[in-house]
Picture 1 (cartoon, one colour):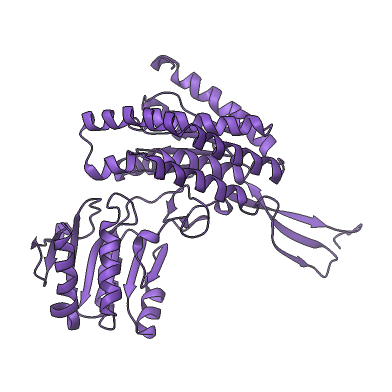
Picture 2 (cartoon, rainbow, N blue to C red; picture 1 turned 90 degrees about the vertical axis):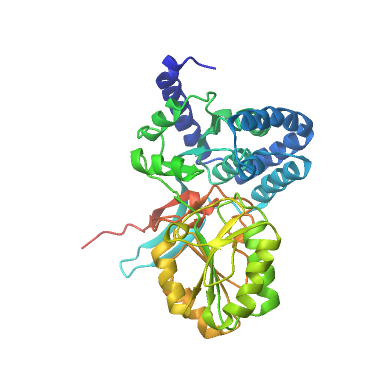
Amino acid sequence: MKDIADIPALMADIGAKARDAAATLAFASAESKQAALGAAADAVWSRRAEIIAVNEKDMAFGRDKGLSPAMMDRLMLDEPRIQGIVDGLRAVAGQADPVGETITEWDMASGLHIRRVRTPLGVVGVIYESRPNVTADAGALCLKAGNAVILRGGSESFHSSGAIHSCLAEGLRSAGLPEDAIQRVPTRDREAVREMLHMTDTIDVIVPRGGKGLVSLVQREARVPVFAHLEGICHIYVDKSADPDKARKVVLNAKTRRTGICGAAECLLVHKDVARTLGQQIVDDLKAAGVEVRAQGLDGSAEATDEDFGKEYLDMIIAAKVVEDIDDAIDHIRTYGSSHTEAILAEDDAAAERFFQRIDSAILMRNASTQFADGGEFGMGAEIGIATGKMHARGPVGAAQLTSFKYLVDGDGTVRP
C-alpha cells in the first residue's frame, strides 16, 4: 500500500494504465471478454473459502465502526451470496456483446448509408461503499462494454473487495486481456477519491454507489461526468382498486426483504377509501414484522411528522400517509421523491396508466415490489448502479448503458453539391 504522500502519483499511474488498457479493450473480441468473465467466475467459486475468511475481517471492522444492522447485512458474504456473485458474472458473460451493435441505420438521398453503432465510453471510475459484490458487478459490466475500470471500494469492504478483484485479474490473465483493464485502488485513504473526481484526462465517467454522503460529495465535487442517484426514496401507493392479497404481500416484501438496499420502500401512501380496511391491515402486517410505522391517518407505531417524508431510512422504519386520491399520491411523490422507484398497487388499468404517465421517476412498477429495482432482476445480469438523472443512462446501468455511440458513414465516391 502506498504512503499518503504518494496518492496523487499512484492515481495518475492507475489512470494512465487504465487509458492504455481501454484502447485495447475497445477492439477486444466478444469471445475473449466472455472467456475472462467465465474464468473470473470459476476463480471466485474456487476461492470462496478465502473470500469468506477475509470478509470476516471486514465484518469485524464494521462492528468496531458501529455500522447499523442493515449496513452490516450489505457487507456480509456467505456461500449463497458468493454463488450470487458467480451467477452474476456468468450472466454478464453470456449476454450479447454491446460493442459494435448497430443501434439504427438509414440511407440518404445523397447516396450515403449511415449507421449509429455502440462504442465503449473508455475509462469508468466506480466509487462504492460497503457492498463487496459491487467489485464483481462493476468489473464485469465495464469489461463487457469494452471499458477499463478503476474501482475504489469502501474502507469497510477493503479485504473482501481485494479478494474478488484478484479473481477478476485472474480471469483477465487467462483470456489474454490486459490486467489493467480492471484496477482496484489499493488504499483506504479518502484522498484517492478526491483524486479520482478530478482525473478528467483519464476517466470518462464516475459512478458513485453508496449513501447520500458519498453520492452528494461526488456530485458536488466531480469534474468528471457522473451517473448517480442521491437517495432511494421509494414510494408505494395503494389505490382503492388494489387487490388486498397482492397488496399485503408486495408491501411487506418491498419494506422488509432487505431494508438496506436502495430499492427498499420508504413511504406507503394509501387511498382514503381503503385506509381503515386494507391500509390498516398493511400497517398491522408491517408492525407485526417489526417495522416502525410513522403514520398520518393510520394507526401506526408513532405519528408521522413532515420530517418523516422524503427520508431514506434504510432500516426497519417506514413513513405512511392517507391520501385523498391518486392525484394526491402523485403530488406527494413529486414533492418528496428522489426519482428512483415508485410502485402502484391497483387493478384499475386507468389508474395505473395515470400513475405511469404523470410520474417521471427512473423506474415505475405496478403490482410488484420495489425490491425488483435491480439490474439483475431486469435481465442485465448485474448493474453498476441506478441512475436517476436524465442524460444518457437512466435506471439500472448495465453493459449497454456503459456505451456511447459513433456514426459510421459509407459512400461510393459521394460528394456534396
